[in-house]
Image (cartoon, rainbow, N blue to C red):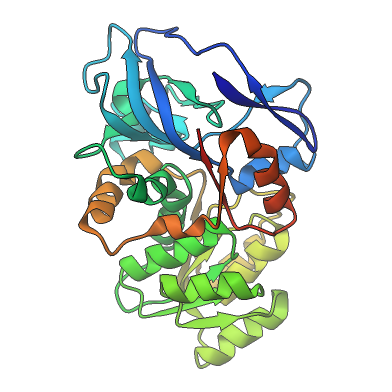
Length: 338
Ligand SMILES: [Zn+2]
């Protein structure tokens, strides 16, 4: 089967690899119907996250169950399923509290830029859709596997509630998804920090009422000005740099909430500022599994199209082109067809 190996920074190749097989009785093998490139895949691709050996990359997937291990009871061959990028048992205390990405048994789902994948802890991880979806639905459903689920968590962790003024820091695919999440969760005013024209357009389509092209202290000053000097009720931080987290914290009002989902790279937490501003802070890798049933329902209900973050469609064999386009910001997110 075709898969994707990252050999070294900038050196990504589509190759024929051995088919995955059941290793644990709790595993399932999925034939992917679609997969994609994540913004976080660019960290190792750019050499910012280092690694020693070539590895099978990709962690977003939807597809049809080919085979299940003997202990699997909730999914069966032939079913169309979506799962998170983190496998979880969905039964431990952390999962039951809604934090499946902190599962006591958590395992990463790897090598998903491929025609077939092995998903551990299939019962806890995979959620079947109501039917086998049309090809037109695949981008929306694939987005739930990570990017939309992560944007959703950013908004939830920020405490977005009806009537809120919400700021979204970051206009990558996750930031844009957080705009859509804020809209769905009832935010009244959504201020997207974005300086790229194509992303500003999508941010507005997803529900942004205002776009601020400035960054850093200038962006904070603009948000303060737009909110009568008060700041935002909730802020989603979707980048992961020291500047973006500082911007997010400074945009929040007294007692506001900041949800951070950008993987932190060299971030120092300004605890004195948190003390002064009474800001609530929650972040981490998103418990996508927690949100899948709700997000699948919203997608099937129509009028919810998180798949619009995909602005480049490629055959899986051309995966390298997808990385290049995203690295050079020619594309927001690349959709790959096995
Ligand atoms: Zn668990």
